[in-house]
Length: 187
Image (cartoon, rainbow, N blue to C red; front, side, top):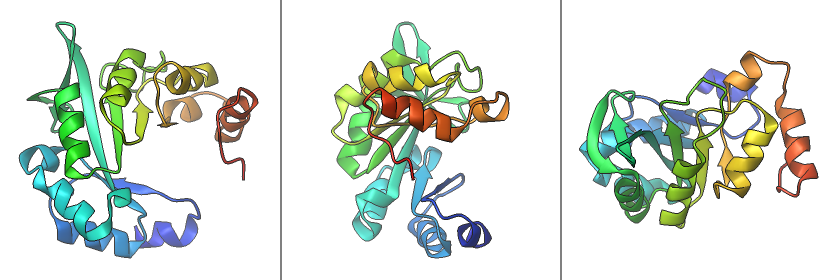
């Protein structure tokens, strides 16, 4: 993280295996702007409030991996392998109440498919909480991003495969969204 932060001049979030406040402290000191928690937050929801209380809500992103099961969006931990017993609405409300500054909501089924975001999932999270929701899982074209923001109510979008497996670029995505009235930082 320290090496990366010396070379990268954009804000970045680090996640994966974060289980306590001391790990959050070390990652932030190493140069991360934010941390993302998932499994550990389900096991100890107070990790969210402890992290937010010490470092500020703006540093704590709660990552929510979901699958649609029987018409309900269900939350999963352990890299999407374990049903937590929470619905998206329940867990999003708890995470926001505990002090999450943002929610990263990922469709497990759409992640990496480039078939578009799960708009209903994103909308449900955005309607449930008053904190920014980042749409994740499924971006295949710039229009998918636009729909996540306009129809889904996302405050931001995350994308990876679209840039790895196509000729599309982050700069072009920002231009596309900006031309359609979505506020973006072009520089």
